[in-house]
Length: 381
Ligand SMILES: NC(=O)c1ccc[n+]([C@@H]2O[C@H](COP(=O)([O-])OP(=O)(O)OC[C@H]3O[C@@H](n4cnc5c(N)ncnc54)[C@H](O)[C@@H]3O)[C@@H](O)[C@H]2O)c1
Picture: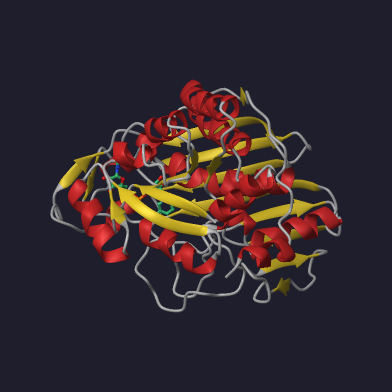
């Protein structure tokens, strides 16, 4: 069990507070935010201690900092955390610049501290079963594939959407981590990427909150297309967009030499995984409802953008598994090398899109080890 201090008391906080109820080694003790009123309100409502960021970083009772500030603040907060001698687990992405993420990883390694990073959704039943099916070889070698995440954008539900449309934001930084982390987990590290980005409108309208009806500036591309080559030879194309009103494909399809697999939504933990062995054959659904991190645990629509009305969301397993790794001196699954490689893919996609060339990645990483049910059961309450 480790005492965890939270920095950032925004939208995603509630999901993390739930993780304390699922996992037995997370003890949230304090919270901080640049907005002290919000930190105090959060603390009152959740029986935590409200601290300033500096107080939390210097607090002797805090072992691990959960950095759930906005992506543009991840670098500063994670760096200060490591400099204060504490382990850090950050929401995705690791930060918004590859060179800064590299510096964070070095700082963590030099200080013998853990740096962990969301997404942890690849540890869910859906992606872990997909990994098993691929590793077992029943659909052969993965040759090609595609993925898509697309929706109209966060302005529809977030009262402060500006940062998603400014430098350091955008669809690839926001949603790329789920897809790229899952693909690296399934296929191994990537080799190069070709990207194309597009901005269709210069302004967007706030749809909720105090500014509803007014507009704000769009400063960066809001749709991206990719072509990714992996070291294992697979070539996967993808599309991530804030310009699509509706679709039904929040998933990854991979095509192997002996069959095809539909990997469920990598933003979530559930299933089913769907496979088909040959042209015209029935698609077989493999349920993950019997998996500890696969079964549906959300039945009412919460209003959260990232949760459909029936879903499996066990966010926090990455933090819990990192705490367990700290206590047992192991490498954690959601580790800094993986997160740095994912950020490399993100940044190189954007570089490729600007210069209209294929870009070789600068980093590599190990595929995280599969997470078995016995290991998960030890962490569950
Ligand atoms: N909202 C979601 O559904 C969702 C889902 C998955 C992941 N995430 C990730 O979680 C992180 C937070 O997202 P969110 O939606 O909760 O954002 P948010 O804007 O709702 O909340 C972020 C909070 O961080 C605080 N903050 C910003 N800079 C800070 C600083 N320098 N020091 C201290 N506090 C600071 C802000 O005041 C705010 O309260 C992001 O990295 C995002 O990518 C969000």
